[in-house]
Image (cartoon, rainbow, N blue to C red; front, side, top):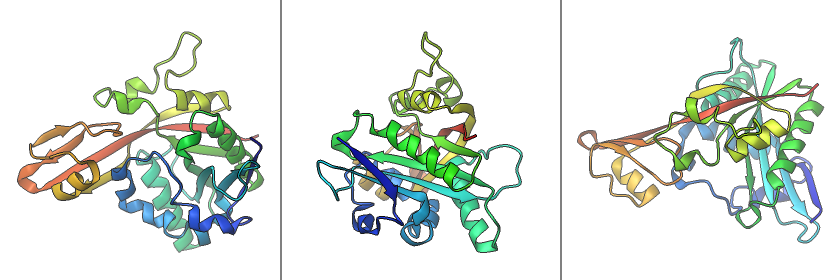
Length: 247
């Protein structure tokens, strides 16, 4: 498989397939309202920051995508609101005419049938290269560890810093970032917030949501807090901030 990675601006023909690619995102994650500040305009406003990949065995068919957002912040530290935070700050920078001084990864998604083939590492390298080409000295990423969902009751502050005997992170996706030159900086405790009625959560998950209290939802990194008496449930997802120096 010979992978070709370009920007969506260079390959606009990928636009119709960009969000319909078969992926592994849990359904509930597609209902974070902050996401619309990026994804609804990604094809037009952020096409230079969206990477698309195909391969010579099936040219013209998307095999992976990667999204970044430039943003402006005067904060000394990376924001506690992680993924939501950089999308909001990116939108505000654009609306207020501020020149972005930072860039954050938002996602790398690999087509379901090609997961485990090393494509995520290739996409991360391409994302680092693209961020450097755009003039940034650092790429930051609110990383969603790919095995944390198996331990929804474990605090992210414990999980993120768990290592193997060789000193590399226990989590495979964090390990990819560290091997690529990234450094774990801190936990983003409220990186993504998804709230909905109980009927919506039942639709998103197929679970009953009929008791007040924590609910374990497949794919969720934390438990979802359910409040039957108020007819809503809230999910607050922690991520892990990783810094990738580019110079």
